[in-house]
Image (tube, rainbow, N blue to C red; front, top):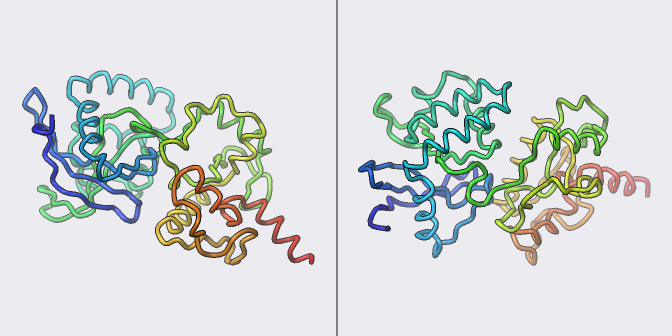
Length: 299
């Protein structure tokens, strides 16, 4: 099998905390597909170690064989029927899913000033998209940022937790429509359930197979409600913490009700046990942080 897989090299996309192996896959029908396989990809909980790379890229090869593309496209068509309000994002998906080869953000993708937001949406829908920020485009005749979509199941071969619109509505209702950052009840349409424990620190064992059995207490423990803007801000703060080992600061106030500014040396960086290192940070549980700070000020 490895004779049909040529590894081109390893690289990282530091801004997104992603790590890839570039490969060329040769399939039975004679097609050669130049693509990039994420080895570290927080959206799907992927974290492949060096001694696991060959087995993993072989697994992806088998998942991506062209004989499976028709069925994959049919499954995606059914998925997009449930997203009637996402026509702009779907146009990006359609371009990327047309050929599964690299697409230049400057000349190939649909014209849109906020293409990065659309790609972010696709990732949040569970699609695996690799990024190369310095790849030559034959049309532009220069180095550009390019993207390639992998025709594998949404959520990857491990996967993060996702929820249906009905479950999202239930979480928002259980949390009483309370925007944790703004400390007030706001319109439910503008709120997103945010995992308190950031996904960048998840591993394959962290994700639950299903969220449909969540109790109200589970929802209150695991989630807080944020606007999309604050949700993205928290992701960046958590990404910086993951990369630097310096915990986040909220509202410009360097207060931690447990721990200190630096990530605890005795707590792992990833996996369920890593959640203990998040406790005390304002972004982890904003309302608890606010309450603890208020009590400290009263004293």
